[in-house]
Amino acid sequence: MRILASDPIAEKGLNILREEGFIVDEKTKLSEEELIKIIPQYDALIVRSETKVTARIIEAAENLKIIGRAGVGVDNIDLAAASKKGIIVVNSPEGNTIAAAEHTFALMMALLRNIPQAHAALKEGKWMRKEFTGYELRGKTVGIIGLGRIGTAVAKRVKAFETRVIGYDPFISEERAQMLGITLMSLEELLQNSDIVTMHLPLNNETRNLINRERLKLMKKSAFIINCARGGIIDEEALYEALKAGEIAGAALDVFSKEPLTESPLFELPNVIVTPHLGASTKEAQINVAIDVAREIASVLKGGLAQNA
Ligand code: NAD
Ligand code: MLT
Image 1 (cartoon, rainbow, N blue to C red):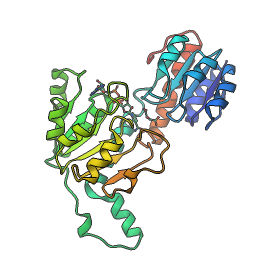
Image 2 (image 1 turned 90 degrees about the horizontal axis):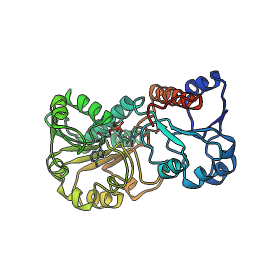
Image 3 (image 1 turned 45 degrees about the horizontal axis):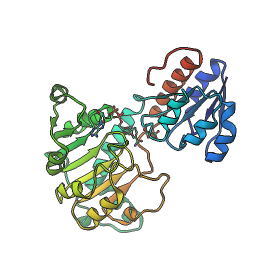
Image 4 (image 1 turned 30 degrees about the vertical axis):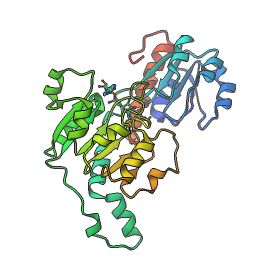
């Protein structure tokens, strides 16, 4: 059987599949039309977030049995089209949790201490100390939206910095929140009370533009917002307006509603720091997710079950 990896996937994972006797082709940066042309040859497809697995690609996939997402979010895969065709979709939900949590933490500290701006200024020959006076994390209230794997890992890390952690997640129990030492509240209360708000929930029809103009207005003028989950959860136009008007203090963004993105009005604001969807980009995480997804694909192609369908 033949497997296509259409985004860069760690060799350690792909080798598991080769050792199982599957033929694995690595062809990245394909257009939708190119994928439609070659997809009938394949029994399995492995992607990260770059490949958009559209209904047209799925319709053309005559032999496809499984799509494996080396990562968490499956918002780049047309799930309805896959399910209509009986194609299993699996993700690898655990392998990049720490990478994404640590990146969120790195963004948080960079935002509070103006590290990217100070770095850029100094490299341009400007020794600016007063302008880049920052804030401490200690004593701040951190609001976490989405208390799953990454949200929980972020909570543990920021607690070590003597913060108060509050959370919003309609799907977790009061007992679980208490166990984690997180005070649950409504989204509106969280936005009103947080010094730093960080997003850790999936993008879907319910969460698209969850943080809109009205909700941004609830935040403190001194508050920061971080999105290391998915572009589209925060309305980017509304965020730009809020930052420009001084309604919030700053933002750190790893993800965008359209990716790749190299130009945006947000990039022109001095209080916005950005990274190009690097949350899961550590050597460790990429090996973990590649191994997990390879095991799932091998199991399904050999007639077994998928754990993360
Ligand atoms: P998870 O499934 O463990 O947790 C998601 C949490 O969001 C769950 O607890 C769920 O109850 C909660 N949730 C769902 N809808 C919600 C809503 N409307 N409001 C508040 N909470 C809601 O997933 P995870 O591993 O923690 O990952 C979270 C998201 O982070 C993923 O969906 C993915 O899109 C994103 N992610 C990004 C990167 C990156 O590279 N930047 C890396 C990994 C994951
Ligand atoms: C994810 O959802 O796991 C992230 O987007 C990570 C990625 O694949 O880049």
